[in-house]
Image (tube, rainbow, N blue to C red; front, side, top):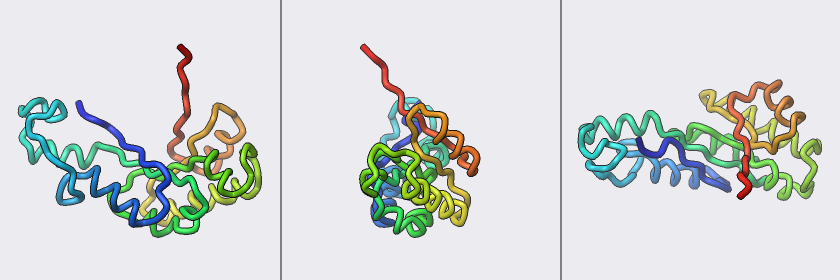
Length: 157
């Protein structure tokens, strides 16, 4: 019972995506540090090699696409082995496009579509914007084939 997912923000190029893979994945995919007696390895009950393989299979690595520079490099980012999910941060992306607070702006919609198309070209990684609880962006995303949607939830004290 260890971490099941890591989300890395503002991934702007393939080098950043590869660095995320290196930090999150055990060898041979990455260079994550090991602890044979961790809780995730059931304090040593799961053999280390088995724990490493299981973690490499099960831990989801999400790279956030939140800047236009990342959209411009999306094909190289999407091609990085070990990245499971490319998630668009539409608020930050809209800011980088100069259309903050306009979730339906054609520039933003086009940028998200560009990410979605790159994902389809590169081994079908999951993609979808993180969205605020508004129906229109969610419906548009689903209609265009998004396989994952992340929701921003906030608990009030």
